[in-house]
Image (cartoon, rainbow, N blue to C red):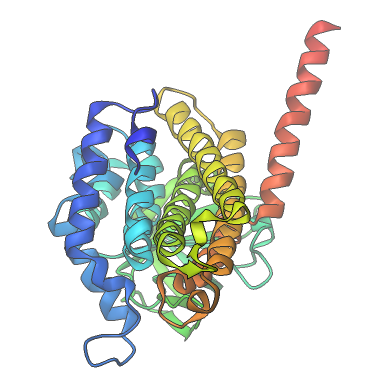
Length: 399
């Protein structure tokens, strides 16, 4: 993070210390993971890289920022500003490092926020230490943005639940040690449930792995009469959507923070290039068109940071739901980062499209952030609904 941003009143000295320490550590310890090939110039095993990153992040204590203090974490409750600082900082250095941190926190998020003490004790300490990899499984082929359309079911059978169906686009699918799986509760209308599934559970399998433009562990999960003990229930039976939406409410702003980290790195690379690229007897930075684009990039980055950290600050200071603020942060920051990175590619010219260049990598990495945890279009609907509801309520109060 930039020193100017850290001087804003959203942050405490604890947050400033976190940003500085993590930046120094990330540049020293995980910058290697941003390179798509190893020393032998062969593509890296992404699964192995992510497993290694989780272990590194856990051993260094950074994963503790995604877990409550009582179960191995840092803060008494999840500190959203710390989550956002960590994602922004890691994303600026390595997309895979950010992914590994984020999925640990998000995958454990439903348990951290809604799990019983026994469930928290069973799963969270190993996530905090990096010994176990977590995953959040909600999306289906025909139930992505419209999560209420999910068809995966769970039915009670004695002391167990039996799950049938599939989940797809699941980050850490195939390498996770535990999945929080959201299902429709069989026999109840519009009732949902969240259960922790372990890979060793009978009836669970990985149907396939999915390759994307920015490789990371992604897969389709299959449940065929998968039997899970009822003591792995997260939250109350029938309240699974509350668990899902409440978790996304906390973590959605952090997606904007990751986009912010990508955008800052794109600006870093741009400033370096335009200051050195000789052209027409001068350097590229001397041209007004270059300066205008730099101004637009910097303004978009600051606007994104203001929205991201406003949402995080509100949550940390007692606002129970930050649906509107988090949706604005996620929508604006991801869209702005896409434009900033595209501008970076344009200013770098041919270098910007060379495979493996930091800006080319950022161009691929940013694209999925405009989709996962709610597309830009869904965020627009969420924001509009919140604004319209607030307007209606104000009118009713004044009537």
